[in-house]
Amino acid sequence: MDGWLVVEWVVKSGLLLAILLTGFAYTTFYERKLAARIQVRIGPNRAGPWGLLQPLADGIKLFFKEELIPAKAYKAVFILAPIITALPALVILAVVPWGSRIEFFGRMIPLGIADLNVGVLYILSVASISVYGIVLAGWSSNNKYSMMGGLRSSAQMISYELALGLAFVGPIMLAGSMSLGDIVDAQRGIWYIVFQPLGAIIFYIAALAEVNRSPFDMPEAEQELTAGYHTEYSGMKFALFFMGEYIKMIAVSAIFAALFLGGYRGPFVDQFPLLGPLYLAAKIVASLGVMIWIRATLPRLRYDRLMSFGWKVLLPLALANIVVTAIVLVGLDL
Amino acid sequence: MGGLFEILKGMWITFKAMFERSKTYQYPEVKRPVRKRFKGRHVLKRYDNGLEKCIGCSLCAASCPADAIFVEASENTDAVRFSPGERYASTYEINLLRCIFCGYCEDACPTEAIILGDNYELSFTDRSQSIYTREKLLEPVTPGGKPTPQQVEPGMFDRSIPVMKNPD
Image (cartoon, rainbow over all chains, first blue to last red; front, side, top):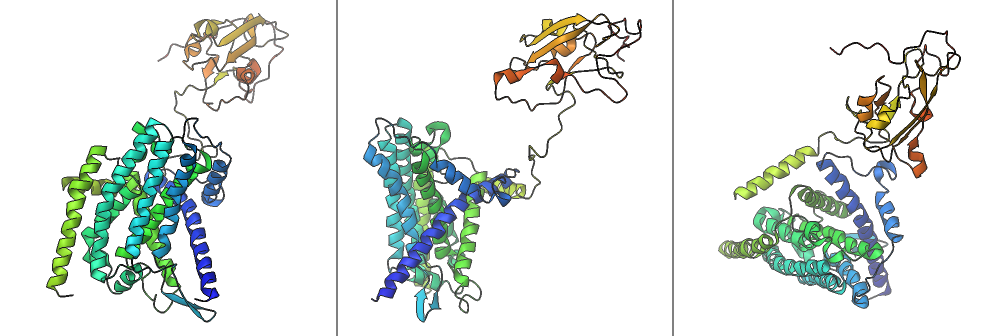
């Protein structure tokens, strides 16, 4: 391992973090604009041209908000919880490739931070860590609504993680590898959403529940829980939760693109490797758009229905999907 | 499975909504015109010749359920004439923080001098700003009229309440 490799990793990680943090800000803007269009409104358009500086204005506002810690909160955990929630969202994208490789000063640089051979397992395990942040936030706030939100959130995430994990299995079996790089490469011809339509739908629904997006935003159901686990948070600590949620949306979209939509693959990507990140970005934006569209359309599910949907519908369907995929694979002797 | 169809139907409706023209207005720049019978801030009306319609009778103050109106009348003379008849409102104040915009003053007025207009942009930074005086409430003089006080020939404006037609 030479020194340049370290430089390469540092540069790529810094780039990814910068893209994610800007992406987070503009995802909120994208959501507000698109939701406004769906509700036949105009949306933010005052700050800067077309309202493009709105995320900046929001950020500055949050910086100057008072940071309140409730008197009877468990202070250390209270401060730690938003960090535990936001960090996994940032590191989860390390295993998703953004392109093949480009030549740069005579070095072949793979576009992507690390292509682990157990990338899928890495994603599942890192994604689960953020549940701790939410539960701890709810518990340390010493507030019944926060507690309820945190508990609901943990139950929901654990339930839907099963379906999510099983939805990963389809592409793994088709590609014969757990590395996301191999899975993307295996979709050179046809995207896996064609072979695994049910798997893709299950993945998408479970992912919505995993990132607490509407219609599965039970942990922060305003009408019953005020704001759920982040009721007591204000200022930048609140912004960290927000950041965690939106970056996880981006991450989940990127993973969905890698597993089912061919990742960075698209026309001419083999001749021009720099097209790869653009294709991936386009797929992420499209997937985010669908998430926002769903949020602007569907009402929140009742909690018991949410749980029974996860356990009685999604889980059996995901299992059946695996069985059918396996039988077809063995039958066709692939 | 029926539920799935309903979800897709709902998604289609919101998808179509994306391409509709926005129903909201860009408020400070574009203002939606108010309805014909909208009750906004009061306006004190004038006759075409510029004389004030208000004769200072205080019936509006008496009818006001919120006690928002204060009127003080003074004598008109033909040399210094504000309104037809004997008296005019030398002080006319409406406290818009008290006003409930019910329009009873409009109904009570014998000369149709007070009308609830179309101005709804009533924000104050101080409570004293909410008291609208006679000068603020009076509408501007229309072309062809003269500002008050006017000097008129004696005997022309002795009747305080104009001859009104029966409504059709």
